[in-house]
Length: 230
Image (cartoon, rainbow, N blue to C red):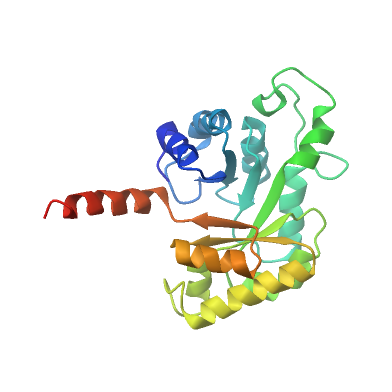
């Protein structure tokens, strides 16, 4: 959420494997990605970009700058899933605009880069609401979907317990989604506000857990430091 390369570097120094750069809810925009993604690559941490909407120009733009993956929000149908996958992959697998002179291609116009990019980038689709839950079987059956990313906050809203990401009904629904995706050979990513919940999702089979927000983690650290003086 914080649009600073220092945050990315600190996360890498702390041992995290990846960072989600959130352009949906935070102040990060295309120009900032042009700074944060290279910072992540240089620090040895994988940059994932949550785009604002399921828009081909936003998806392709994030990947052109060098994102390792795109996280596409509010997927509620098989058609929406297919559109996101198509926007992220070059033909014949998709319809991503082709330019081999972008940062992700090393600026050097290598024609072989298109096939490599199709193999190497990942498409994560967010299942967050009642529509996504109802359409989960067709979303999981969409060719080219690498993972389902579960957004517990939106899911809790849809289930009538807003903000209660550890509500038993929310936990049960997420557990069921992880199991169904795994049975279909699709990986699952989940957001977790605490390390304890992150461990739970890993134990249940999630392949990626996004642990907390940089804003919240920083606030917790500042509060702990201040309270240590009392």
